Image 1 (cartoon, helix red, strand yellow):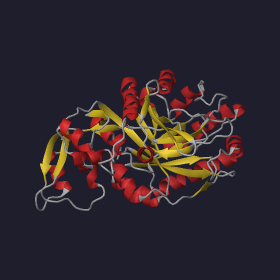
Image 2 (spheres, rainbow, N blue to C red):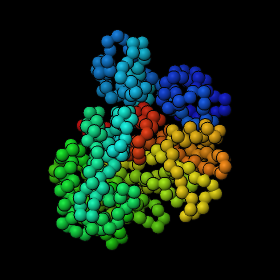
Image 3 (cartoon, one colour):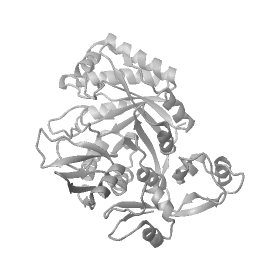
Image 4 (cartoon, rainbow, N blue to C red):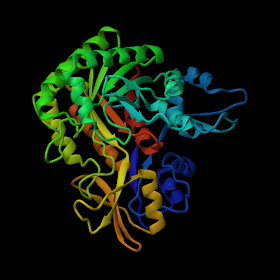
Length: 424
């Protein structure tokens, strides 16, 4: 496996030829819709097949996988071009294995909204350990607002992926409901109602486990929050379901906006089965900046492994970037979210060249239309840098915010480097 940086005058054909691989496969793996248009500075994932199989009349994926002693999901992971098709055709070559040796086993967690396109979800599921469905809103009286998630749960289980129910006091507009949170933490009757509703829902809908994502805990409620986690975790785990907790910069807000660092983490890590350190924003990030700079992640992990068992730590990998209008005006300028695929398309449309900030390992580009803009996003090289930290620190795995678009480079990179843990 190699990550190639596109240079001037290079084409899909010339790059593929230089590595001795198929140009068509290189384009598919990197979601390149127009092979005649590459961006200078663009990162391309180059994978090298170790063993291939040529499809014959009457073949099907299950039989091919069985003949090589590999799971059918592994065959799908190696051949993402199959996701959009119902059939395989005689004469086509399928990748059975890659030359890369798997480094270690990790868990992978994808966050999705209930309205995700099912065909898109099916593309991502082979690469997942868990599917976390975002989200059940907690009401003031400890109830939960139902969501249309049964098809997602059933589909996930059909792919051997564990569906996780997520509860949160975020409102419909993704704003923390501080009053609802405070009421749940201080009112034992309301808290009991919430736990009962959660257990009923997990059983009724056949969820695998629970993820708790509570934002903006008041300073005076920190111990009450720990008591609540102890209570709900004990009840849910006694019922036979694992409990996850998501910690973000908004869980215990700080003046700087950094992830809070305090003794609560140690206790929380003892109460749950897994901790997700996730940084996601709703377009209100404070200034033009890289999405999850590598130096900040390293700093966070340096601290986290002193508070939490590494085997319980998962680091969030955002696939969302942001477009900023320049000059930046504090308190006025608002970022617009953009996916990595859309960022590449935009760079092509405006004729930009992708640059890289070495300190953060993040790609960016600038362009001018009627105004000047800067775009920070993630690509396969920056994701690779984050995955190297997973190996270095020996943590459990990663979570992706979010999987509403298929991120081919991310998943193929993970597939080439790691065995994906399965709990079903």
